[in-house]
Amino acid sequence: MVSRYGHVMTINDAPISALPVPTADDVPEGVSRLWSKAQEAFGFVPNVFRAQALNGEQFLAWWNYFNLLVNKEGHLSNAERELLAVVVSGINRCDYCAVSHGAMLREYTGDARTADLVAVNWRQAHLNPRDAALAAYAEKLTRDPDQVTPADLEPLRAAGLDDHEILEAVQVIGMFNMTNRIATAVGMVPNEEYHSQAR
Image (cartoon, rainbow, N blue to C red; front, side, top):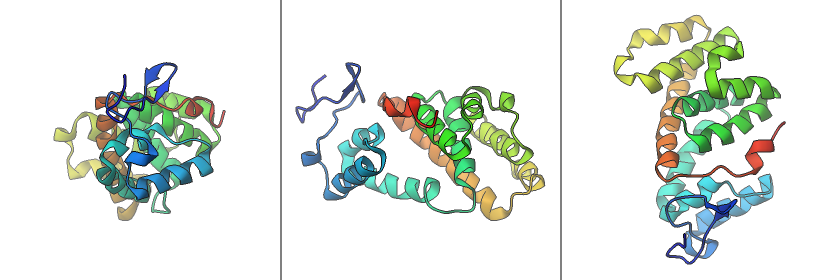
């Protein structure tokens, strides 16, 4: 597959996206800077950064909110946010996000076994009560949003989450449901590096 930019990004001869993937010469300066920072920090540029950069300004708007919710200091721990990402992505069968955020969950918890189990069936992972309450809520809001009511927040409160933590959990769950659909729709392929990260 050759993009209109004349650039093909592949992993094992498979394109990383069903849509054209731009080069650094084709993207806004902010995207180019982000790619450089990622390369410096991780040793690679996540494919989501490349695939979504086809619409550079929209990608930067998505990234700013995603980065705020997932990477900056917030009300939930990094491990809790990654737990939500993996639960939602596993339920949605989003390969890219389940693999990439599974790697981050391993990184933050130091527990590859639990991270792998969460991606398949969080109930088998023997989570602590707080994490289990977060996972259960993420599952319901992802699978059955039309059946969610304010009463579904009570198990989160019972597990010790305050209102700021609950709202952040809802925002992270919503972000990953949206991002999963983008990644799945364009057939994003996870970077090879994620498979061995933190193992």
